[in-house]
Length: 235
Image (tube, rainbow, N blue to C red; front, side, top):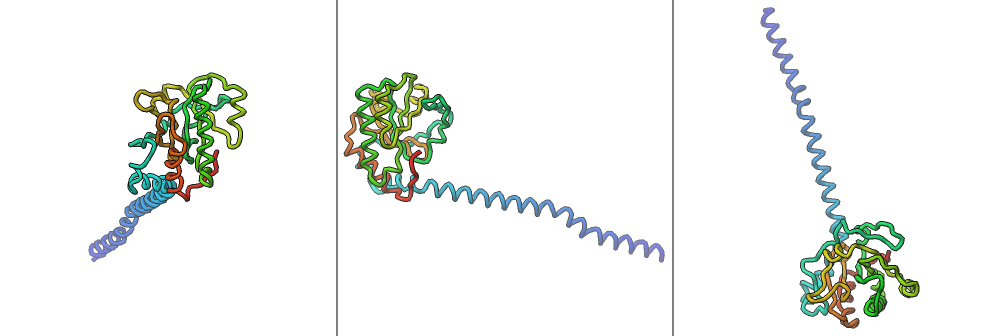
């Protein structure tokens, strides 16, 4: 009998240990599942935020590529678009480093001109300013950017002229790096064009040589109006 009781006692103990063992070993699985759910939820929220940020820009491309506006564009659309290089070495006029990431968030009407800035450069700077003003209520979506590929100081009178109204953002960068990102039309140079960079930092349009402001403005109008919800003040 004592042996039977001992056996029953052992069986009972084993029976009691079994649920405890299952509980201990199943706990990490539950924690892992919860962690996976949190990770998945975080990723979904991040994708949702990215989608909201990109929606206005995608709407603009939709106007060109889906609504049959591409064939009517005066400028040359760049396909595929070209991302601004994250390692692009940019410096402001005081020599302070500027990250390429900081240029995102606005449409950028961009020039690449030497610091000496000849008559052709001055003409395009004037056109850049006028094009922005011609956009009317949409103009706050567009910033003016001048990329300078050398160390030539700007003339004081030129600096004063381009500081009138909303000033041009002036940044210097190595010529080779700019040429690796932006490309002129065959047989031309970077200084011959106006370049348009979208708010996601992608070069997506290039003006013809000696652009007609009224025709180029129509391309800008389509892009600006297609993303009416995008409205950030210029930097």
